[in-house]
Length: 179
Image 1 (cartoon, rainbow, N blue to C red):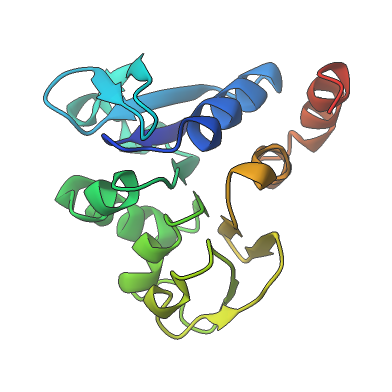
Image 2 (cartoon, one colour):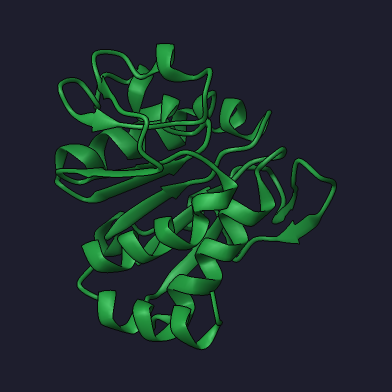
């Protein structure tokens, strides 16, 4: 299962297009609200009803965590103990941690990107503690996938699918979407 965490202020394209592409690629994906309710409001005022809340996350079926950017969404995710604890545990177990835009700062401040190549939205590089910062649009190093921003979402989702051995399905889905 891929869990896409949503916090008020999330970047809608990064979260929802990723979910769409992963589901089209036949990857079990659930959106997770860190709020007390299932409703989450994106950075551009788009309200979304998440599939589940944090207490419904099943750590035993977790294959990947997706952290969308957007502000203050990335800050809200970073300030959620459940998210940071789960990211740390999953990373240490070799699960895929995928973060885009401002969200790479979350594994960054946790020290999980130390010595790894990573990218992020310009201006957040200082939060990727001890990472090898690149200017690439998308970077995969070990079990971490990082991407610059909304314009990279299709590549980001395809890389997550590839990491989960569903790259061919993602390529078919993306081709059918005429990207």
